[in-house]
Image (cartoon, rainbow, N blue to C red; front, side):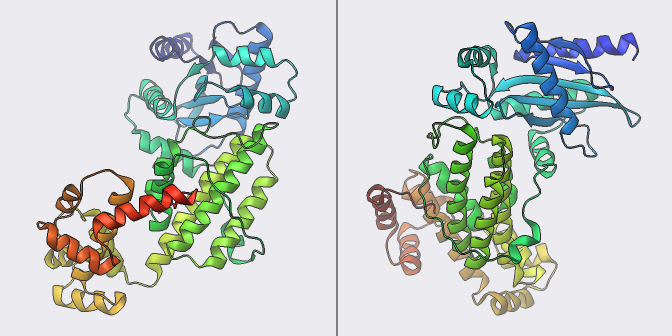
Length: 423
């Protein structure tokens, strides 16, 4: 490589290091680290081992049609960003940012990590983590977008980074095995997570909204805010956590309309695959893939019995629920005569378009009543009800209780059940 080019990559490394505090490295096309800005205080042996982990990581990571940035992680909870340098389709090396960690490593996690990796000197491992920069998932995504811009001078949104990293996952899910195998065991365990966050996440599964789920999952930080489910192994902790999550997703998917046999089969197969894994990051990736698959299955189930016009109508109503939605707007969106669309919609769904919109608004109101502290007056106004008494009348007709009774009843149920209902 020309010296001028190497100096260019070195300048980018220095810029990222100076502004974000991230260790930076340039790896040449022959998989050798040619330039490094290492974390302060790392011994020569530690630097050598770190370089070996980086080389192994980028050598085994997924390669797609994009140059990156790729979000990579190790079983030691280290996070890296890789942007491949390509000129006229020729690979010229990689710029690597990291390692960083999402949050400070707790003592109990340190014990599990040391055991998993057969590290006898826990104090040295703790000192290593203390020297790493802490950067949460969202900031790391922004750092990845920044690195891409510095190399290619083109902007990339963090949602694009999330999407192509999700799509390029080495974990491919269960595929058609779900439709072949039938489960015999059922799992029913509780989940130790933020109840509101849990409800939002499970609601996306129940609603069959996989695209939104991907963005939400990518911002999860797996080392913070989670109870310890194994004191002896971090891998075991991640497996236990994933089993709990899959149990909740199974229930949410069934509530969303997925056939119970399919949902339980997915649950069993994912858990069986996770049990065979030996890397905590791989288990976490499998959990994210499972969450996406459950939501996608629910989506397919909801759309499967309806024509494209009716599905498109439902999508339009979903996207514009907080606006005035008219039959004329819907007919224009699907390029269909309004009278014919109205008949077709009722024939396929069993309810008129206006009744469907009404029902969707009440479903949205139910979520807002449980998941937020918004005043009822604000909720009905946002959903285009201009009269509280009419909103209450419709709400009572569809639910059997008033909005206030519904909010109080659901919260009372969560308080006394010992387990938050993920709806």
